[in-house]
Length: 151
Image (cartoon, rainbow, N blue to C red; front, side):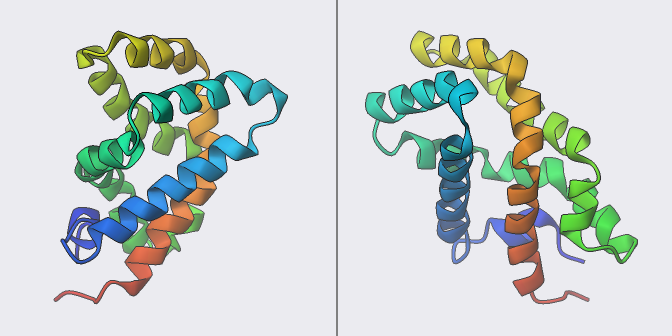
């Protein structure tokens, strides 16, 4: 059975996955109401500081994301359960897996503006990532459903 890394990161697929992830992030940011103003502001700052930064970060982190989510993907497949349903039933686990990566990266960040923005938003980060899990699950399901089976 293929791993998520094998499915999501090959040269022919990776650019589309990155574009879909960036769209997912845009949708999540746009979906935030008044309580999401700090997130919207921070996202706007990030995009203004360095155009293309979001897709660049996704590209740099995609392998880690795929690796962290792979155990849950493999468990869903082993249980013959749809990936979306499996992820959606484990929003906290998915959020923690993804946030562990961003936490490590933020600790090593050299850009103080970006680091400060992340540190301000991190306390509410798990809730926001949990809310994004349905979109993440659909994205993973899209690519895993299209992946050819392996022997």
